[in-house]
Length: 83
Image (cartoon, rainbow, N blue to C red):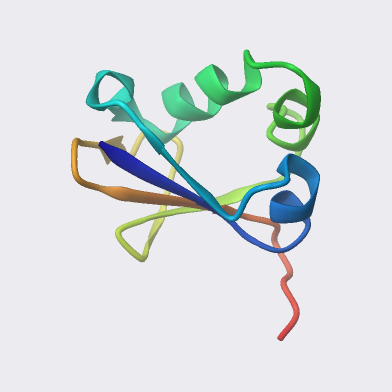
C-alpha cells in the first residue's frame, strides 16, 4: 500500500487527510498524481498539472520523477502552508 497524505488547502478540497492506494499505483510522483487527477472532481482541480503542488516521499522533498514504491508515504501540499 502507498499512503497518500493531503495538507492545507488540498486536504480541504479533496475532503480527506489521507488515503491508501494499492501497491499497483507504485511509480513516480507524477504518475500517481496523474492517476489521482483521473478521478475527476476535486482531485482533477487540485492536482491538475498546471497547478503548483509540492510533494514529499517519506518526508523528503520529491520531484515529479521521484519513485514511489509499496510501503512509501507520498504527501501533497501547496507551496505555502500555515501553522
